[in-house]
Structure formats: structure tokens, C-alpha cells
Length: 204
Image 1: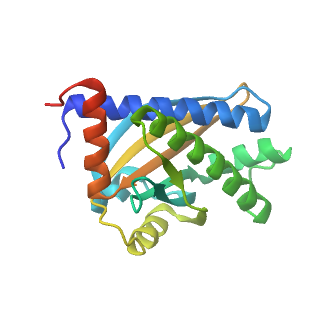
Image 2 (image 1 turned 135 degrees about the vertical axis):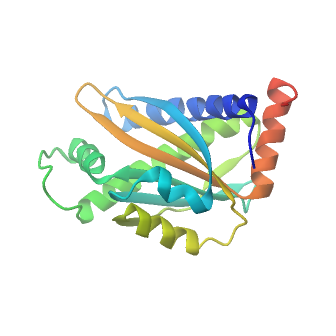
């Protein structure tokens, strides 16, 4: 699906609202001021997703979309290893950046993913006037290409496009790079575009 500039602007605004909700919730959890920006948004074919992500080692926290649009597709928090360790170090009071991601990190990343994605969906769903909820999370820690291929192979929804929100979490100490991969099925994507059109007027 080729989206127009107006549609992309509307989805970017959706992402910014979701990011603001996620940052507020994460700030409360970490008891530290966190700002989250969405400097870039892309809509890519699911078969080309790995070309836009790169192939670094990363943590991927995966949710299926539930609520009024269920079954609606998937949403993934994608955090490269260095940023994942920086984030969990902040949570766990650690400083070692040379270690491997361990079980404590996994637990912390699942918690962060659950909080961020729930808040992100709350913000976007509130704007659209619908209910969108994440399923309980699953996690993959792997090279990006292998991890995403494995996740995509297990999807049972009709997902063709991925809305890629490239995000940055900024605190006083750290900049943490992450991506939110919003992977609605075709019906859900059309429903979201329809709801956005009702909010902003006809999308040409």
C-alpha cells in the first residue's frame, strides 16, 4: 500500500502522541525524566523490513494487537543490544556495558516493553476513539534479521505493511535508540486510516 504524504503525516502524529504517553509512563517507572521522540517514520513492505533495521544484535519484545480490532496484527519494541543494556543498567543500578544480556535484563526489558507498548497503544487508541490492547509479551534476543524472520514466520495475521517508528528515548544521562514496529493486518490498517480520515478530514 502506497500511503500519501497526508496519510504519513497523520500516522506520524499518531506516533508522536503514542510516544508521549510511553515517555510519561516510563518516566514514572524509572523516577527519572524521560523524553521520547519519533524523528522518522517509514511504511515498508514486510518482506523488506530487515533492509531498514540492519542486522545488529537486538532485543525484540513482541505483542499481538487485541481489543476492538482483534485480531489486528502485531507490535514489536526493537532495542539494539547497546541501548538495551544502557536501559537495563539504568533500571538495575549497574554500569557494565560489556556483558551479555542475562535473565535479569530479559525480565527488565519485558517490563519496559509491556509498559511502553501499553502506553503507546493507549495514546493512539485514545486519539482514534477505540480500544487497542497488547497481548502478554514474548521476547526474542538475536541478530535482527534472524529474529525478525522467525517472528514473521509465526504470524497468523494478514500483515503486508509495517509502520516503522524510529524512536529515541532521552534522559539526563542517556540516549537510547529503539524502534516500534507496528504491524497491523490489512483490515486494521484500513480501519486506522479511516478513523484518521474522520479526525483530520478526507485523506487524498
